[in-house]
Length: 209
Ligand code: CO
Image (cartoon, rainbow, N blue to C red; front, side):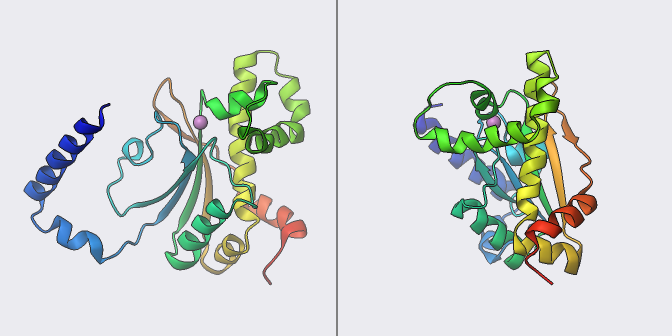
């Protein structure tokens, strides 16, 4: 896609928005009240709002390589703080996807420079679930399972934060783990049992009374 085309598309988009609602750009700066924080992969094929059919103002989005939530990443932590404590979203979603280049790279033993420490977080997920993953002989299936387990572990990372723990107890904030299947376009809920995880991880990561 050429950058000139992007500016032409932008003009068309403005015209279309105004055709549907002449007040659209008068209302847009008034504020946002999204109900969902979506943490997904930067992969250009996994378009967050588009695949969910969401419009402006509906989803607060954070994307990085392989939808990671390392608790030392100031960017992810700031997004969670802002979305949960200030915007008071009702749901936090971690969405992984099949054919994720980040997850695949973490499964291979190669030196990827500055990406190494980032991918090490995915290797930690593999180590935590090594017995299960090593028992899957089919490489594609093992790769798919690591995508799911990574989503689960990143959801746990979300729940380690004080903002999320507080909101879970005080206003029943929900955390969800989803996977986008590239071959069918389908979003699947992994139905992770968060109340159970919360009570288990609270024994180690409790930060609120
Ligand atoms: Co990816």
